[in-house]
Length: 226
Ligand code: SF4
Ligand code: SF4
Image 1 (cartoon, rainbow, N blue to C red):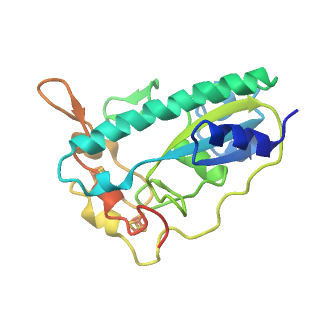
Image 2 (tube, rainbow, N blue to C red):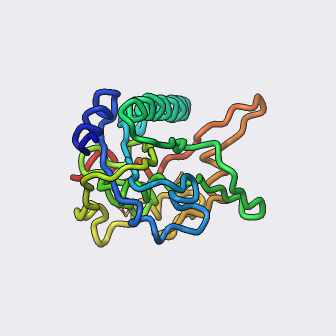
């Protein structure tokens, strides 16, 4: 059986910038239907990794670079998941991939609220990749909120990483809350029905554009802890 460090080395060699592993028991507080064992009953470990995004897109005036990079990085992370899954399989570790974003099934039409089959940002927290900010994003000490997270559920046990203990939100900071043009943030959740108007804006031609990322760019720790 291979060690946790060897799994991380494989993930890094495939292009991951961060990687941590959490025991499945840490996910007991996840909502029913959205726990790792609801996806793959044999899960014993949750392998979480992330790729960083180029940071200057935060400060572009056009929304096209931000939209484009977000689509590309999602594909890159899903490709990384596929490659890592096969390498683990070749080493005798049974595993199941979780998509970094879509597809997902849960949709509350009234609230226009969707949920992935597993919360990537909570998985990131539980595996030591960072902590959740008031803007609802995972903030890593080195890369800030400019990361895209991937997850593999494994029927395998190893040494685990502890959740991060560094502070990501200064006590009096509320920059993300006050900058939101839709008042969609309350410090713990995001009201998707409000955010979606801008973050998933559909053009007449059918393109879906991310026209707002202000809660991301306004964060003093957007590109790493200051
Ligand atoms: S992306 Fe824009 S609209 Fe959505 S929560 Fe952030 S600041 Fe608000
Ligand atoms: S803007 Fe301030 S409150 Fe919001 S996530 Fe960043 S550090 Fe936390």
